Length: 153
Length: 403
Image (tube, rainbow over all chains, first blue to last red; front, side, top):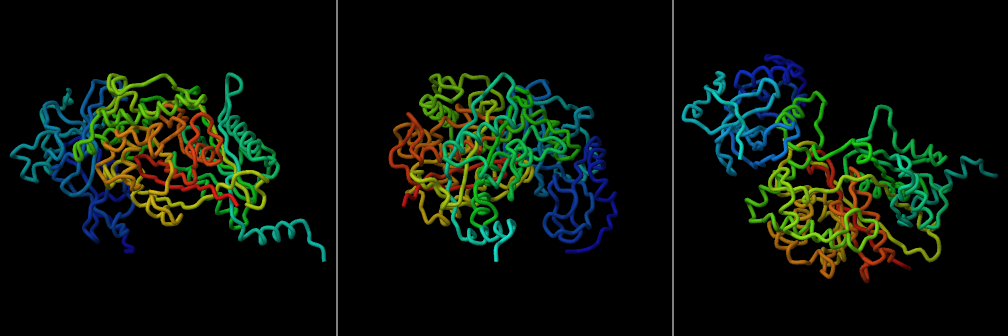
């Protein structure tokens, strides 16, 4: 197992805070291993889950993803409006949970894109992929959607 | 030369190192008073299980206890139970992995007996999650400070209901499983519960009732979800030479466990679970095939669970679970009785259901299951599920092997 604890972008301990800051700016941040190149699941922040390296770098995701499954939550735990929660797999192979934007296609295997993050709840919103989303730099540069209203119905 | 007390104990352990273990008794707690406690339910269940086994409580030298929502700082469940029973055990286990833990602890206790670490072990569980309002259908809204918990909880989902909603939805998409198939799991469990006087829900239930119950997280309705109750139970294992005369000899024939993920974001497959690994390995250890299993006790916190477990354990091909449960084979009169006490959907579900899977298997193997007793039960497969997102699996195969 590599014994390199350096981390040029923020450090492992800072990743959750960096993730939150970036998400509010419309960028999904991931941890990528400099040793083997794999991306960590969002629940793994200490070591590379593939090779055990601590040489991890925070890198922006393209935000492009595929719907693995979705559920219409009729009675959300936060007592808010019903919404469709989507379980997605990002292009980088990392999985996330989020809320589908109003009007978003939420069919199985549908292609979606990360849009933005609700400032109060921290919820991640995913919406239809636009032509501009095919340019990976858009997500990395912090494109923020106009609407964050949850998809209902 | 005479042995000191300590040497005698050690010598006894050495002699018993090759001894085998038997499950001697099993019992559920009976509620006494208006304000039961988790520990009180454990004590009551242990006393009843020991009485059914014909083994004095004072002989217990192994204690295994699991817990979930009532875990608190400084909480040491096995020591709490030992203290309450006035015992100083030589083996304890506090395995915490959710509802699979009691199933795992039976195997741990049997192994401890076989290694000479103890002679009589109890596996106990008790919870008052319902009466103490520690749990409701809003589920776990974790305040751990972990990023992954924030990401999931911020969606407003119902954890763990929505985990299984996502699993069920994908299974329906991939294999054509229907909401009616899921509902038939609940209906089957209820038909068994109607034969169980201790089941919480015993009124008749139809597929239409399930489908017309309030939708929580599609495709799961209220009646696709387990009960939220108080409850407790215990099983007693002993060295085989300590098994009282005339007691049926129920043994652990095979066991396997795997822990694949703690949360949804690290769940590899929505439609194939860890049971696909543990089932074949436990059957191989037991030297049995699925055709030799007389009945199954499968964790059923939500209706998708046993449907997928039946596939993964090898009772039907992947994707055929819907047709299998709808065929009537798991219901009273079917050839593979499943959850004969009514399961977590209709019997009880005090936070974790694993102990009740084993209790029912022991009662069926001992011929003590009352109106729901099945004939000629020789081999029962129990499968416990735990973890944060269908991620902890344990298959335990018990069998009656009278001399």
